[in-house]
Length: 185
Image (cartoon, rainbow, N blue to C red):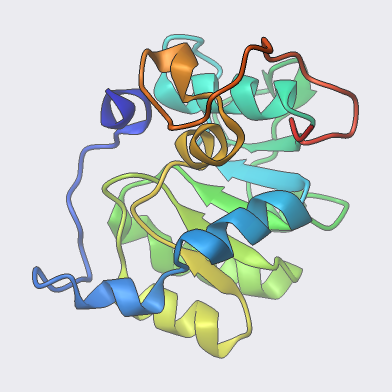
C-alpha cells in the first residue's frame, strides 16, 4: 500500500541492481533524525492535482508542521503556497529537497540542492541515483533514496494506521497535529 501512495514510475537510473547503493543512503536512525531536525522541505515535482501522490505527501507533511515549499514550473500555487520554477528561485533557505522526479533528473536537482545550501536530498520511492548520491555526500548533504518522507514519518511517529497498516505503535490516543510539533508528542 505505501508504494501506491508515493510511487513514481521510472526505475532506478544511475544505480546498480545489487542494492549496493544502500550504503550511500541514510539508515532508519538517520531518517528519524532528519524528520526530527529539519522543518523546511522543498518538494521538487509536487503536483497541484490533489489526486497525485506528491500532493498527498505535501498535505500530510504540512499537517504535521513541516513548511512545504512547492517547486514545479508548471504550477502557480500548490496548497495555497506559491510554487517556484526551480530550487534556486526560492528566496529563503530550505533544509530538505524532497524529489518527485524521475531518476534521470536527479543529478541536476542535486547540484541545485548543493548550490542553495540544502542539508538533505530525499529521493522518493523508486528513485535511486548512486552518482548523484555520491556527489551530495561529498558536498556534505545527507542522502535518502527509495523512501517516502510521508511513509517514514508515519512509520516513526505512529501514523501508518491511517493507511490501514500496523506500524507497531500501540496507543489509545487519536492523532492531532500540534503547532510546531512535527507531529511529535
